[in-house]
Image (cartoon, rainbow, N blue to C red; front, side, top):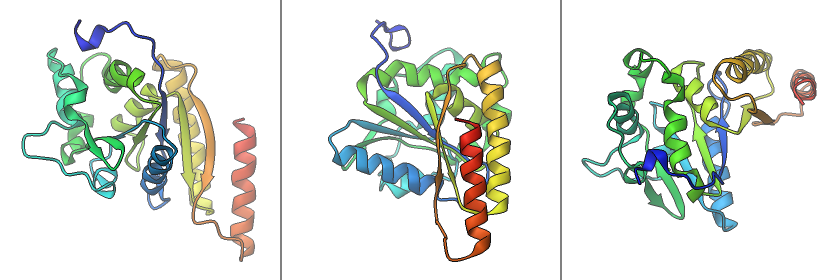
Length: 221
């Protein structure tokens, strides 16, 4: 049976790490979570949707010449000739990795067909029954790559540093999540939490910003 129409129950939990602000330890949070889950005996897949490929490199992934990456799978879907996603997965110290590619920089303009927001979900749904957790790392923006990751996910973790600008970014991301729920056929997408990274409690400004982040978290449940 072709991979794209397999009928097994979908079992894995898909978690997206997202924040359009850079420098908030988003990738570090993603790969450390993957390593912790793997060390606890869970089967984990990391999908790198960031063209900077920091998750791919941070996990020490050796991408062999000719090895397909996530962009190759997406292009196959766009052309109507999908590949088996397992062909693009590399095992690194107990963590499965679907490597990213710098060619993801062009995704916003390359993929223009109807339903382009669903492309990554087609890949994820084909393999999620084989993993306990699928973690998706995203670039620091709210473009096509992030929209695809949110559409494919069950939950979102929002890494954020305790600063005014990071809190502004959370609010913008929450608006994007609301749009994905409404327009991208993912109404059950949940915010799993706001993860404060680089926590700073020595200054009044940092404490106030952490309080603001707490309030934002309360408002979004």
